[in-house]
Image (cartoon, rainbow, N blue to C red; front, side, top):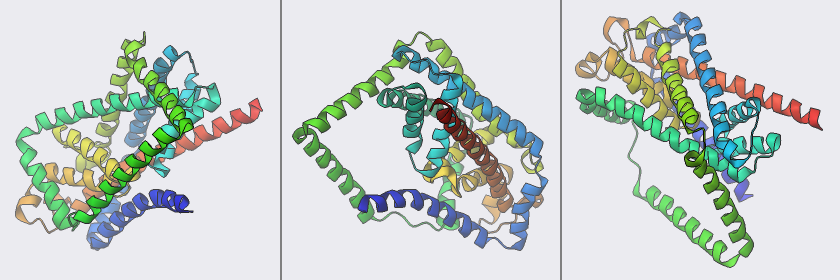
Length: 349
């Protein structure tokens, strides 16, 4: 019973936090601010957004093809369709349950191509390591070209935290609870490992499969193909985000350093709250305001009025527009892949 309650809270809590952020900011807007937020959706060029989503689809296909390179040294050759479906189902699972996507992805390929779960999961984790490295490279580039603005950007983040969100610092007891739970988990694991031979055997088997998956990066013959697709994936990620700035006239003049900064900020928004609900639009909107209406930060940090009729709500609205289109794409493609896998299972049975 306790486990079920914990699993439910693990799903609901991030979603509730995201919806609270949405409600908080919407409730703080006056009628004019709400109208400017909605106008972004009305005035957007949806053809450009559609092109952006097509580029996103290319990144998913490239990721599916790249995964095949990692599975080949393990003796498995899934079809592009099956690896793609597993990836899209993993994406949609991640939106529902934090970190569930990796397990779902490995489980789907286990069902379609009989790839052992531990080995498939190991390749996915290895892939995540590469993706974190690539994100770090993009963030490094953004920091380098924004070096002169870093102090102001940090000040903006602090101001957003204290004045706009009115967030309070985390209390020491919360930190003690987190570290205490981590300590209990470590003690519990040690107890099971040294007292339960079956648990030890299963754990060591999982570790072996996991390390086999990691090793494939260094042992695969197609490492250059893997690298090429990695570059394609991340060029697509940045490009699909870049193009959206031409979908609304209020962001057409966004400089490259601002676009990269907004890209990193939006990614952080996804990390803070599962699915980026509320946080993604806010983080992107704040960066837009910094680059497109810097006097808002200097003259009156409490007002919503900005230069040339631009408003902070409109910038958050743009972030919400980008978030909504990208999320709808993931949901649509994920459900489509789930349906394809189910149909294929019925045919095989």
